[in-house]
Length: 259
Image (tube, rainbow, N blue to C red; front, side, top):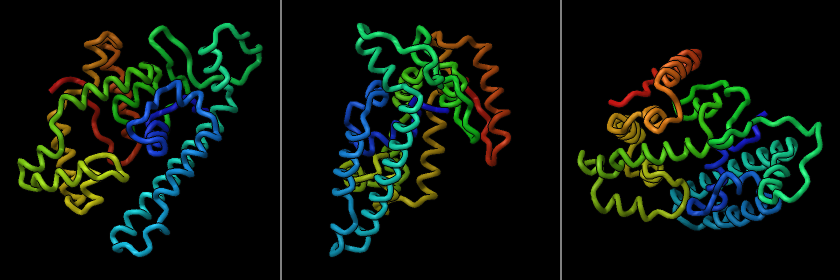
């Protein structure tokens, strides 16, 4: 059973607490249900469609979508907290923060992760759907979660922003980009905001994302260059991922090496 927070849980938490909030692993492992409920109620009041009854239909549609996203995020977080507490993870997280307390008794609920010198490593079952290389390495227990986040941040810094590409191609101008960046509601990602505001079509967004990915460095190279994995290990894991993804529709061939 998965009790250690994954990327979906992290994104859901940021939806409720704000993208600029300090959402760390320790925060997720020690988050109390009543704090979660308070954050949800506040966000639900801000996005409830009834507040926009007399607005433009497009605004009403947008708020309905935001309200749905907030409710889905709360469902994800509530389910995570219930599974985490059943496994006793929140108690263990508090014990790490206060080492003077007595350890848990033998016979505690089984963990879905293990502790290595580099950090927390997932040891559960790999979820049965397609994965990209970074998330697959995490679910295989090859890298800790905080290393995955660092790798994703590193990769994002290597590629040009979607707005720059879209402006270069003539799909967006400076005024469009300013509107997208100034949009304060949900969703958070640039491409999703552009779709939400009707400034890009779904086709254009897919083309931009596909082209952007061709310009970024391969994520697997990060783990090899920094000594998290040996080259042979990375090759084998990439092959394992291709075999895993081949069981699901539209499986893309994993390639961890630099362009």
